[in-house]
Amino acid sequence: MRTDADRAYDKLRYEQFQIRRQAVIAAFGGECFVCGDADNLHLHHEQYVAGESDYPRHARSMSARLKRVEEAEKHPERFRLLCATCHGLVHAVEEGDITEADAVKQIQERIEHGD
Image 1 (cartoon, rainbow, N blue to C red):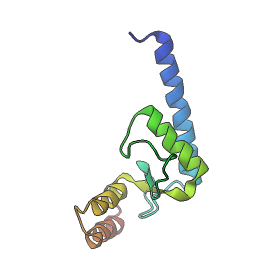
Image 2 (image 1 turned 180 degrees about the vertical axis):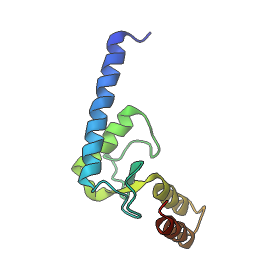
Image 3 (image 1 turned 45 degrees about the horizontal axis):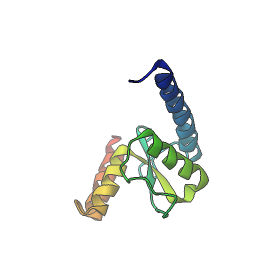
Image 4 (image 1 turned 90 degrees about the horizontal axis):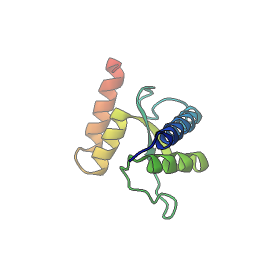
């Protein structure tokens, strides 16, 4: 059973994560590398390094999130800041769900329409 102390620790840990994450986002320029959007930003791994990027790719646990932020602080060259839409398109291309040309077209349409 979780105690009040456990919940307080989790809350503090989450707040510290958010502060560090916002600092990393600011260091990356605060906008999507692809389209320039400043909402719903994600850190996209461009380079995985064994022993340092050893958390599951889509992990959402606080421990994995902290490791990802720590790695971005130490090695920003391994990451790109992407909005949720561009991040999804990058992964769709990587997974073969859409072509790179289709992703570029979708991004261009978003930029043209101000989405």
